[in-house]
Image (cartoon, rainbow, N blue to C red; front, top):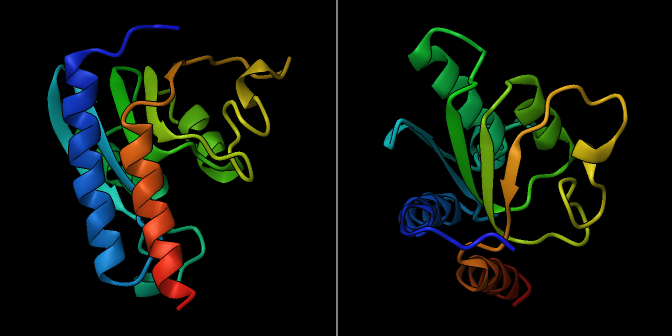
Length: 154
């Protein structure tokens, strides 16, 4: 397994702060940060309830913001940090945007489409591969998600 770099921890902590924002408006606490050349270019968090939009996952909103800021949908030099392993929709969007690297926190055995449930990138027809590092601050990410759902079930 690849060693986790200090910069990966730093940016994942920023993604966790975004996740807190999602929780503050009663959405599943998932946050994401886009980084290019060591600088944060965009931040986002789940906003499905606020926007009444089932596609308003942190990753989708992040890719939209990063594309607008950079003036291109081709995000070949961008690293995406997200607190939970992306679902199939988000993995597809990350693939379509041609990101350089994905770093995620908690693994998602139910919906994860990068490693846990479906290894999207290993499909034969997938012609763009990006680097993946999972498990960065996974305990912090998983704890936040568990606390959110525990609170909702009260």
